[in-house]
Amino acid sequence: MFRQLTSPNSGFSNSDLFHLYPNGLQMVGYNAATDMSEAHQAPIESQCGWLRIEQDELFFEWAGEGDPVVFLHGFGLDLRMWNPQFERFQSRFRVVRYDLRGFGRSTLPSVSEYAHEDDLKALLMHLRIRSAHIVGLSMGGMMALRFAAAHPQMVKSLVLADSAVDGHAWSPEWQRRWKAMCDSAKADRIDDAKRQWLQHPLFAPARAIPSCALLLSTMIDDYGGWHWQGRDTARTPSPALAKRLQEIRLPSLVITGSIDIPDFQAIGNLLATGLPRMRREIIEGSGHMVNLEAPESFNKVLSRFWQELS
View 1 (tube, rainbow, N blue to C red):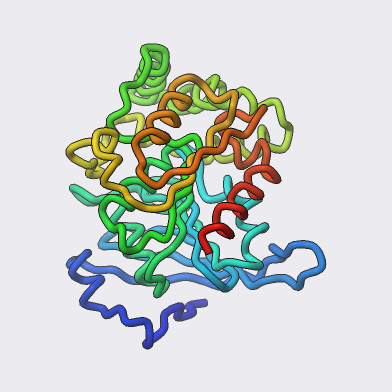
View 2: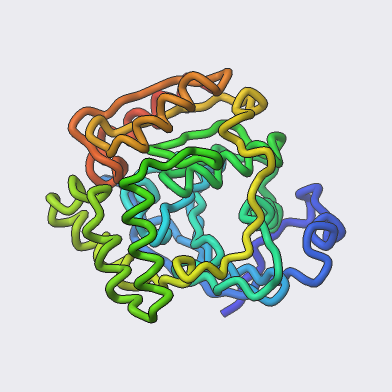
């Protein structure tokens, strides 16, 4: 069943969206009432839908009222990785999560060029959100940085958890493993590429936690592997953001799991020295999937950061 999610008093116009996507943008979707409540609270209705952008569609979900918070997932994963945060924060914030184009229930890109930061802008405009706290992990952090650089007026704050960044010089070990996955995918051995991704040292701490291991396995099993075949047409920033972090003058929280792999430790250090308005948090004993491995600690860090901003 379709339900209109927009408000005529938002200040956004259809021309704003058509300027961004002149070939068309439309929302189709359904409602879902789910019990995402914290203890002693009534269930909150969760709204789900697809936002059509030209020939493609983004799947999204939101719940709650208050300051908007948007969660961006990691590579090969989807919006389900944010389950602990979506449940925890919807009693105090308007929480939004979505599958980036090419992941989860969103469609594969069918256009010659697109930008994830433009997709996020279109989604926020459709939901009548003028600015939001943006939270990203790994690839999601990289997309959060892209969005902040392109549309700083729409960002209240950034949370970058074990983040990637455009322009990072990946280690030989990372490049070797990535090439092996791409080679498998290009040889039509997608299942083997996904097996390698799940078994990557990146996820070793999460695999040791049964609930995390099950969710990771499910998400990666559902991932299509299309990006490893080298057909993605997403636009990337130029110059790379690693060389111009000082331009992102927004309140930023950089979170790193203490036992994440060296590449992401190095990126965390780069962000900590390059972002002008940065706060750093190390979560001891956690690896790359810090929001799933240590959800209570992760949520407390986010709550404290946002409380101090207010």
